[in-house]
Image 1 (tube, rainbow, N blue to C red):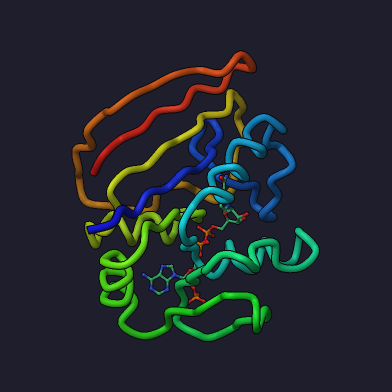
Image 2 (image 1 turned 180 degrees about the vertical axis):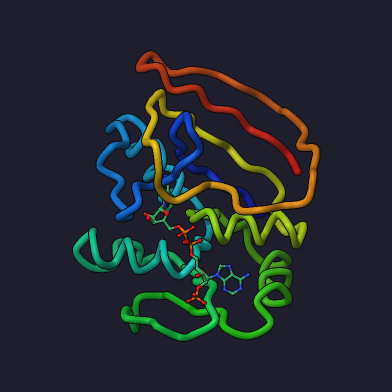
Amino acid sequence: MKQIKAHIAVSLDGFIATSDNELEWLPNEIKSILNNQYAIADSLLMGANTYHYIFDHWGGWPYTNKQTFVVSHHNTNVTPNCNVRFLINGQFEEINKLKHKTDLLVVGGGILITTLIKAKLIDNITIYTIPKLLGKGIKLFQETPELNLKFMESNSLECGIVYSRYNL
Ligand SMILES: NC(=O)c1ccc[n+]([C@@H]2O[C@H](COP(=O)([O-])OP(=O)(O)OC[C@H]3O[C@@H](n4cnc5c(N)ncnc54)[C@H](OP(=O)(O)O)[C@@H]3O)[C@@H](O)[C@H]2O)c1
């Protein structure tokens, strides 16, 4: 069985983006670490909001050489012929099937990560904590049942970012 893992940056107060979906507050160090994780991943998995954010803000689709799966209730694919496939029916069954074939890196966002955790479909999550308070914004975690995660490792970067990996 392959693995589904997530790498995500979060403010100290638990937000992955500002209320208007901006990521400009993320330090360059973390942007390049995350971009490297996306580049070395076998396949990418993301929620529809993250997919549209990337398309709208990064000037087109940056991952044409990599299979990307987008979870949604609707097919709003604006990048045909770019290796992007929408999972719009039986999403968890589809993801479970994919897990037999390929490692998947979850790009985000919070809604998708929370549903994957609830469906027990995510193996581990690495959280990069940025020492910044946003005050409000898009949350990393939505409501979940009480759940214990297994702490695996933690480290820090010179710029003050602490990152920790947990298994589920
Ligand atoms: N800080 C970081 O490292 C980081 C990383 C990635 C993204 N982001 C930011 O996070 C924000 C987006 O996060 P988000 O939490 O709002 O949204 P998201 O998780 O990217 O997408 C949520 C959408 O995905 C679909 N979805 C998720 N789970 C589903 C399921 N189980 N079944 C069917 N559809 C499902 C739904 O789409 P439909 O409504 O279309 O059905 C849902 O509205 C953006 O601002 C992005 O820039 C930050």
